[in-house]
Picture: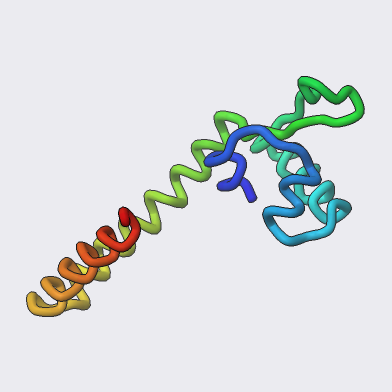
Length: 104
């Protein structure tokens, strides 16, 4: 959910709940916990005074970036240590094919 805010920008509780497939009440509890940890912050909705929008704080963005870096490091290490040269070549070829599919 924090990654969603990081990638998509500020949004409402209801929109986050829909994106994460949880009830709005559950999302409110999650956001309250993240706000307490200073990972998200709230601001008035720009057009609807009844709502608020949540966004990630600098601390929240750093947390997301740290997790992403750890995942990337793990993957690079796993490719390097668990795959032989032929498997790495096959993986590179498959990656090129997947990139082509996404671009078309």
